[in-house]
Length: 354
Image (cartoon, rainbow, N blue to C red; front, side, top):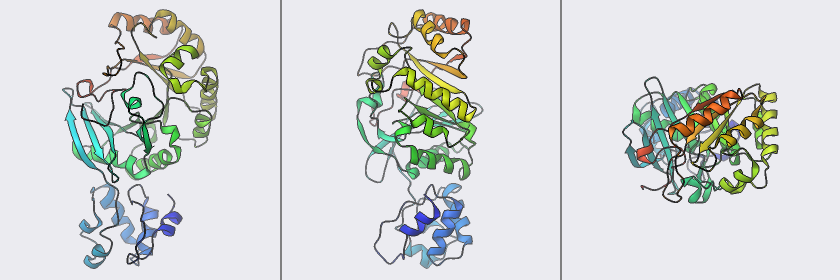
């Protein structure tokens, strides 16, 4: 949202109008807004500090503002959610169900390690991609999240942990590249207003035709992670029905263009399903497709959900897959998801308490 759009939507507080939530706005946008309200420009910087550093949830609580003005703008939304449900896994991972202003519930996850705090954020209410092994896709799609609803997830985790967030992964509910405008706006705010470096942000996508190429034009320093999960089109369609119109060869061509445009490698996510896509011949076929590619493969052992009966491969099977990729000089690592016991691991996110 630009300063112009803020100005065009915000008028006198005495008039009954729709006000966009302020969370996600830059200091420049907030300064334009306070001046529109007849306040001095320096209050924009104050407002920015209270929103992003003090975590204020109501303009009425900003004590440095004049009392009368606080009363006038008290109903203008900042754009914060409420924690509907919170659960903690034995490894310290925390799953949050956040209630939005319209009553929809989304999920976000705080993942602590010794040196950093990562937030797995959602970009949609539900997901339209319908990956067969993913709990989110089983619940269907409701709507895109707005800029403030994405930024809010990071602030919520930061406040709850009482610790600065260091990394963000757009790997929660939804397909980020079906909500590109709001995702880009949220990345800008998370970088400039919350202070998280772009190189510490990862955006994950199943792959939407032409969207990776368009995303590359923004020349961001974020990591692009593509959910591949299969080495060929036939198997990929079985696991990701929405992939039928977008052939794997076309997807990889677009990924190569992304590397050419940005100079940054692509990370490929590959969930290992026992007896389905984890055989040595699958690894060899995957290696052949990725040969000469500036990329990295993240292998993710399957995290169970109750809707389907896929199984996680054992460690020997996983290591055999790794060995084949390494023999073909493919950069690879195994990522064991955190938060498994709290249903907060990769593929387990759903907007209920089960």
